[in-house]
Amino acid sequence: MKKFKLVIVGGGSTYTPGIVKSLLSKKEDFKISELRLYDINEERQNKVGVIVKKVVEMFDPEVKLILTTDPEEGFKDADFVFAQMRVGLYKMREQDEKIPLKYDVVGQETCGPGGLAYGLRTIYPMVEMIDFCEKYANKNYWIVNYSNPAAIVAKAMYKIRPNARILNICDMPVAIMRNMANILDCDRHDIEADYFGLNHFGWFTKIRVNGEDKTDELKAYVKEHGYIPPDSRSEVRHNDASWLHTFENAKHIMQMFPKYLPNTYMQYYLLGDRIVKEANKDHTRANEVMEGREKKIFDAVDQYNATGQIDLTQFFTGVHGEFIVEVAMSLAFDSRKRHLVMVENNGAIKNLPDDAMVEVPAYITKDGPDPIRVGEIPTFYKGIIEQQEASEKLVVEAAIEGSYEKALMAFTMNKTIPSAFVAKQILDDMIEANKEYWPDFK
Image (cartoon, rainbow, N blue to C red):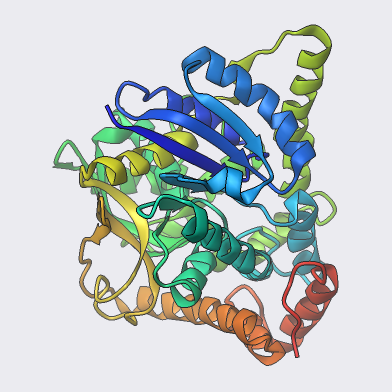
C-alpha cells in the first residue's frame, strides 16, 4: 500500500486533533507514514501537539509525528497539505466582528466587511505557503485548503498562483447536509446534493437520498423548523446557541424565497438588519469561541501535563475532519467521488463570468475537480451572486495593487454595507486594526 506524507498547516488550530483522528481512522485505506504539523506560532502548536501525540498513539502509533516551524522540514517531499490558517488568530477575528457592528453592520468572520478584512490578511500568507510547496514538496502535491474566507482565498490564488495544485473546500454545505440527513433519517453519505453559488453564498436545488428525490419533503420541513433536526443528533460543534439560531434562521429565508434551500450564511446577506439587531456588540462569536473551544483545549493540555489524564473524545468533531480526508482520498486514488468544492466557473454556471470562483458539485480526480455543469440560474440569484463576486474580485485586486480605492469599492459593493460613507468608516477603522497584516493601501 502506498504511504503518504501529509502536512497540516495551522497545526496549532484547535481543529487539528479532530482532523488527525479522522485521518488516522482511515489507515487501512489511506496510510500516512509521516504527519507534520506546521505553524508559525510554536507555543500554540506545541500545546495542541500534546493532544495530537495522544491521538496518534491511540489510532496509529506507526505514524511519525513532527511538529515544526521550519518550512523545509514541514513541506519536504509532502504529498498532501491540509491548510487551515487563521491569520491574526481570534484576536483579529474579534476586530472583524466588532468594528462593523459599531456601525450597525453585520459583524461576521467570513461574510460582509469582516470577511473582506480576513481575506486581506490571508492572501499573501497563502501565497507564501504555495511557494513552500513548490520549493520543497512532492511535485504532484495537493493542497486541500480549508482556510477562510475560502471564496476570496480561492479567487486570489487562481490569480496570483494559477498553477498551484490547490483545491478549495468548505465544510458548511456538508454540515448542512449532515443536518438534512438527520431530518430525513438517513446517513449523510446517502445524500446527493445539487448546489450552486459562491462559497458561503449559495443554494441547494435538489436533494436525493439513494437516488430518491427528497427536495419537497425537506423544503416543507425547513420552512417550519429551519435546519434544526427533530432530535439532538447534530454535531456538538454546531450545537451551541448561536449555531442553533443560525440553523433556525433558514426557515425565514425559505418562507420568502422557497425555490431553493439556502446555505445558512445567506442570513447575513438577506436578514442582515435582524442579525445586527440580535447581536451583542460587546460579546461576539469570537468571544464565544475563545471562552469555549479554545479554552477547553488548552485547559485540557494543562490538566494532562499536571495529571497525565485526558479525555480525547471531546476533541473528535465529526464532519469537519471527515470531509477534508474524504476529498484527499479521492485525489489520492482518482476515485471520482462527488463533493461540493470551489472551482473557476468556466461555464459551470452558464450565465456567470468564467473567472468567478463558484461552489458546485464536482467529481474529484487525481488531476483535481471535474465540475458538474449547473446551467443557467434565475435572475434573483444571478444578480446577488454577481454583486458578491464583484466585491470579492475588487478586494483581491486591492490586495494585489495596494489600491485604497479598490478596497473601498469592495466594501461599498458588499450587500451587507448600506452606503459608501459607512463603507469608508469601516474600512478606515479596519486599516488601523490590520496594519500589522494588510498590504499598504495608497
